Length: 147
Image 1 (cartoon, helix red, strand yellow):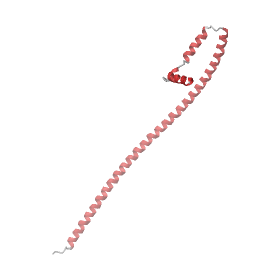
Image 2 (image 1 turned 120 degrees about the vertical axis):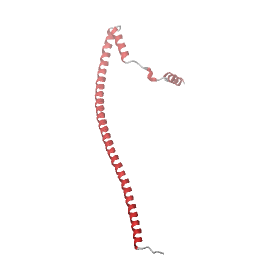
Image 3 (image 1 turned 90 degrees about the vertical axis):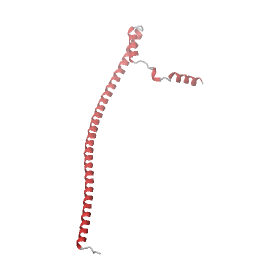
Image 4 (image 1 turned 90 degrees about the horizontal axis):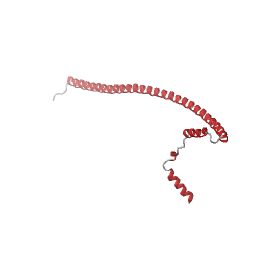
């Protein structure tokens, strides 16, 4: 049998070293490629998150501006409604005083009939708010009262 020579052993060791080195290099390259790919994805996501955060911030600021404007408008409307309610109350009292005096002086005055028509048009009585069940509910209430 031939014993391995020093050259044969050196070649085997060198081949094993090259194989191991190549394997480690390939492993390092694969790990580097995967981590670089992961880093690229992460940087892309961070850029996208940054732009999304900026868009949301802009939307929140716009909503806050709109909300403040709506609050100002609501306050203005409330003050206008309060002023109109005071005016309507004053007009109602004035009308009652004038109408009462006119009825005592001239109950057949056409201005009274005209005022009644205007008030009926301005404040019509709407019984549809009671709903379609109103007649049925009314008859049920009458039955309860009778029993």
